[in-house]
Image (cartoon, rainbow, N blue to C red; front, side, top):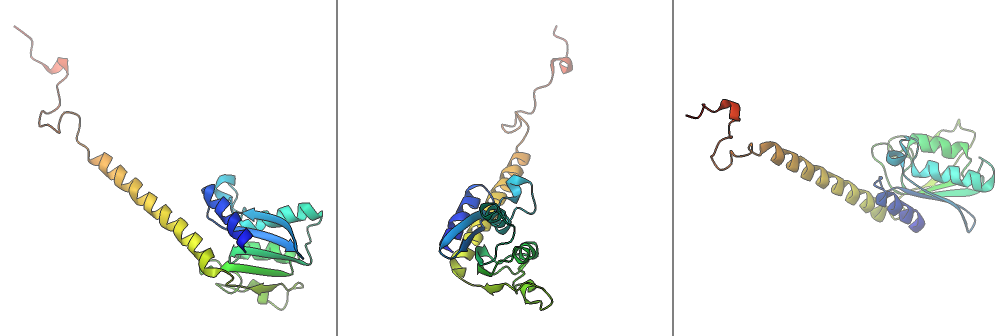
Length: 180
């Protein structure tokens, strides 16, 4: 999970929501990924998807049996579907996602007995640290948005040039009476 947190930090440095993922098989790290939907203009560019794509390339197969995926945030439904299609054996996530979590946070995609592949799920590993990374990112984003609004409001409230000193605005030469 520490490697996934490092990948999440790379996402933060790129201006993305700090979510990182790592895929391992046995003691070997197969792939890493981090969120990049903003920069990549790709709604599917979640950390899990990036790691799954990299692992499939590294192993030469879209199926990844015997692999485990470590991710800092509970996977969403899209990522959970891809995880199942890849035949990942186990998912370990850090922080729960109360808005889009698909490992029990909102829905439990992995609990459906009709599915032909069953992935084991463990949640809450380094949950505080993983959650803190997300909370601090969004707190900073909200602070920056407040500052931008204040700056825009302050700029909109500035008086026209010359009005601040009570001088009024200088008339154009066409508005002046003719000189004698």
